[in-house]
Length: 244
Image (cartoon, rainbow, N blue to C red; front, side, top):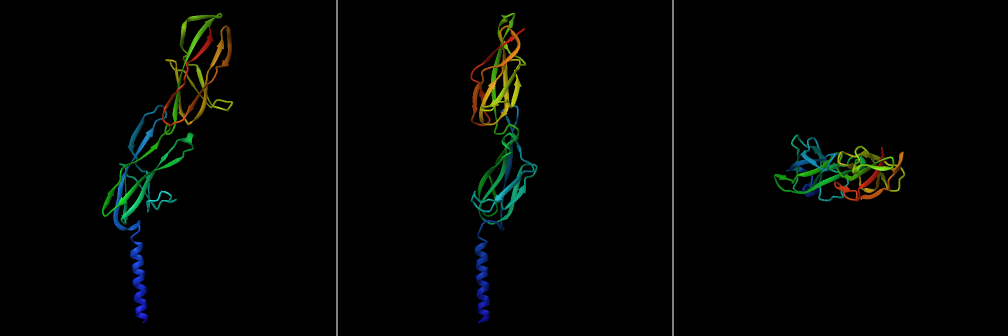
């Protein structure tokens, strides 16, 4: 009788183990592999370079549930951006790597996920594209400044010309002090790079005809940056006065 009970308990334990082994996770002969590519966003324009994400961590969740709080395992990509998870059982998994926003967006990380159904053997996953770089998630504000020169209170040198070298300021709406400034280029244009989403005031300075060395701020122009990685143009040209 005791032998029978022992055999029965052993069979039950084996059945439970077999049942457990049907779940996703380690303990099988399947593999998941794929590539990770890094889209690197430049700080000074909206172009981006796509390169293999060498040495990047890739994570796996042993289920198809994105709400699972912690990854079950991670591996590093090789020099070509390739990764492989081995010794898995057949089932549904999630693999992911992180995009990283720049300092202006608090270096926030976003998981770029791929859902995978692993069968027997090796399952290849669509590439994972992550984003990084000083321009990622940020935009640009562009405008133009023209200047009319005066001498002894009389317009001088013909019509307005590009206000080369003049400073333009950027501040957040509701704040008293600008947090960034730039200079006007040879063609009269200026650009603010790496601007996070938000509402801004843009302004420069001007003199009154005949009142030299007394600079006043221009009326600010309001512009709202909504989407990332776009160029937002100031609606009107700044026309300023400088006395010679």
